[in-house]
Image (cartoon, rainbow, N blue to C red; front, side):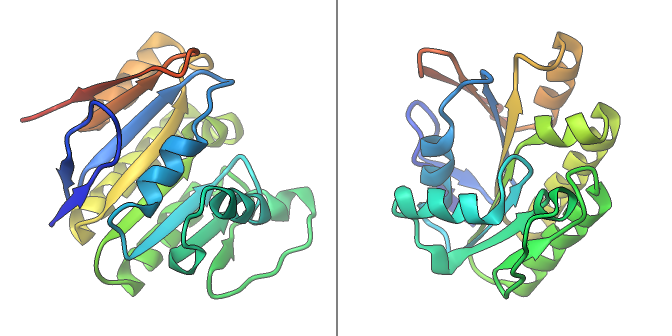
Length: 195
C-alpha cells in the first residue's frame, strides 16, 4: 500500500516498506518533520524514543496536535535513569538505548499487533550509537527496515550528521530509499532512490 508523505520536495506518496533517513544538525528542529510524518495517513504509529522520555514524547504529540490514541511509545531512557514508569497499553520500556534486541523485538510486536497503515519513528539512531556502537545500531536498523518491508509499514529514522564521520553517514545513507537532509537554516533537501 502507499502512504502519503507530507514533506516538501519529497514524493507525494511512498510505498509500504520504505525507510526514510532524516539527517539533521545537532541543534536542528526535527519535531515538525517527525510529527507531520506520524500524523499523516496512518492508523497507528510507534515512536522509539532514545532522546526523551515517554512523557516528553506525549507532550510533543499534544503540542503538534497529533492524535495520541494512535500512538505507542517505546521509552528507552526512564529505566536506566531511575525515573518513575507507568507501563500501559501504549507505553513500553526497555532497559536502555543500547538494548538493541529489545528495540527490534518491541517494534516487531507493535507491527504484529496492529493492522492498516503503520508508521515507525526512531529518534534517534545517534543516541542509540552513543550508548551502544555504530555497528550494532547499523544491524538493528537493517532489521527494523526488514520489518517495515515484511509488514508493509514505513519508518523515519533520525541521525545527527555532526556526530558521525562521513564513512558512518554514508553507510547509513545506503540503507535507505529516501534521505532527508536538514540544514541549520531549516532548509530540507530530499534524495529519493527511485530504483
